[in-house]
Image 1 (cartoon, rainbow, N blue to C red):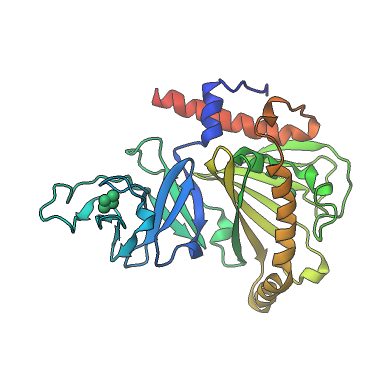
Image 2 (image 1 turned 60 degrees about the vertical axis):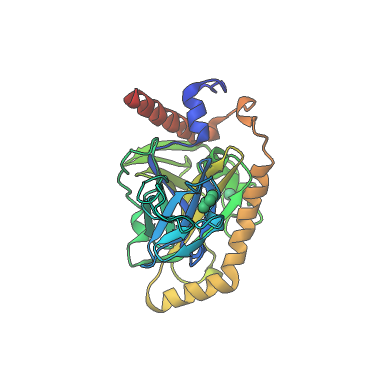
Length: 339
Ligand code: FES
Ligand SMILES: [Fe+2]
């Protein structure tokens, strides 16, 4: 695919993050009894739990004079602004204006709401292209519901464009170089070719030699209401029972210079093997995984923001190229449907 100019309107829309789909916005443990302020896709959200424990998300803007609701407090099913106490329900309507009797704001829907789904340690929000767009279906990776899989969700903020993080995940060959000294990605050939294959719901990028189970040898990119990747990484014997280590990953833009990455770290383990996996993860494996992820973060954060206009892609970049093509096509189709 030709590199598009920065003025291409479709590409500009892709760069700011595709709307009309779901995104992971944070892990469940980040939201307890206090409001949390988040920026995702350039939009400011306040997220909290109501009295039943359900996660609610609103635009982080008080309907009175625009203060950040995330600086307020949770009052039952409402969030109370810290400035003058205006209370807003999870559906965006003003519940009360305590400082004034019979205020006209009461009962009016004045704050944008974000549909929310919480599942398996993760909170997802729907980002519609306008306020009235009803949320679409969200088909989460089956591993997140199947009882034989067990794992941990982790997230990190990276100071790089979200597309760099996705590029990195459809680029298996970097495993043999950037992570050559790691506990999981030191094996296999350091020279190969790549092959692309269409699969149900997305595409697969893999080593053409057929090498598997030695390195980051293959990865799936899928879109099912949310964009996600699936990668299996070999584990050494010292990592205990459960076979390869499966990563399910999401990337959510914060703005055009930062993103949040989410990586489920999963293993097919049950019974005593599950207990051993969880023990080993907490005592030794988690630290090693963060070490590998830091190698990615440091490399991606140092790539300049205009890199895509100066790059010279080669055969290994067919995954990067396909990813851009897929995102561009989806955005083009959405824009023409809206027109
Ligand atoms: S700005 Fe929020 S109550 Fe006044
Ligand atoms: Fe990596």
